[in-house]
Length: 243
Image (cartoon, one colour):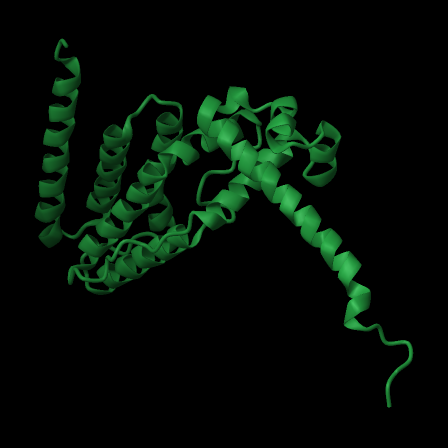
């Protein structure tokens, strides 16, 4: 027996169209904000310019997404979800420490490859006073899968006796990520270029591994650090050459 009070699918269509229209306009705002950030940086993103770029009124921007800061946060969340990429294939190396390093290099490659968007986003978010590090909130699949790969490799290295189990796994993991999170700020504001960002992060990564490494694996880590030191010196010398 049919319930006379039950609504037919047609009854929901107007509300569904309204929701779709609101979602489309919100996405238009985010796309317009992305264009302004890429073209003019954080200083070029004002509510008036954004409204003109999106073809909407300033009032509509506030009604749909809120203040400039709220729009930036929405754009960051949207970008982290859209810019998902598979983590670097770290599973081919038999050595767990090498797998951890490859996963870290995958994170850096992802950040650098998407620098035209991530740089102005990070700088803009920093200036709002509500800075949430990239990858610490609503992170994309790339960051999650890369961090999972690093955690799995560290767990194996601890179990195999390559690393000393003197602190908890979470503490060790945090220290390995500190390098890229700190260097990220300098990279976003142009203090570090792509190569300097990569070298500084990897150097901190290997120094942290060295602090917990058992004697038989220390030579391999020290070799990597010497290689990075030479690369640092080479890059620095090239920058000092007169044009």
